[in-house]
Length: 166
Image 1: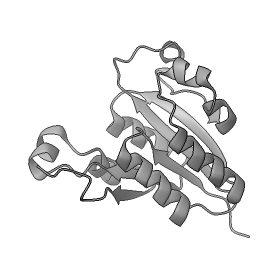
Image 2 (image 1 turned 30 degrees about the vertical axis):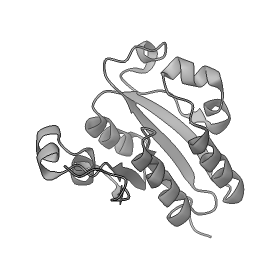
Image 3 (image 1 turned 60 degrees about the horizontal axis):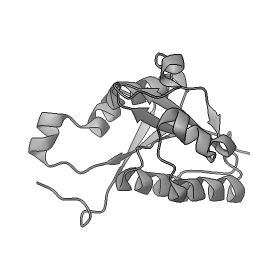
């Protein structure tokens, strides 16, 4: 029997992060794996839990709690039924354990820190498909994470027809 893995999924609830979630569930998750949904809030966001967990990130939040409206209010995360449905299904069909963790700060740095702190075997991240000029000016989260994370990183590209490439 294969050892269960710890798989992180960067989730900002954008179409490309949802695509990364779907890809992970369809191609990577096996029976009994642990899925850690990682959300990074902007450093200036002001939510009730930020004061408590700004340095370390939130505790690991189980799927059942993630579904509660209280969670979304406390952490300032939009309640996304599509994401919750995907997670609920994989928890039942593949008996994967699902938890979430919220960080505050620069997504590049926080995702790399999460890979190490959570001892991830793999991290999956969506790519926004920025053109070369925007990528140069804004920096690419996925490029940074691929280069600096302490685990294997998979970048799931968005559907080219749904991303504008200027």
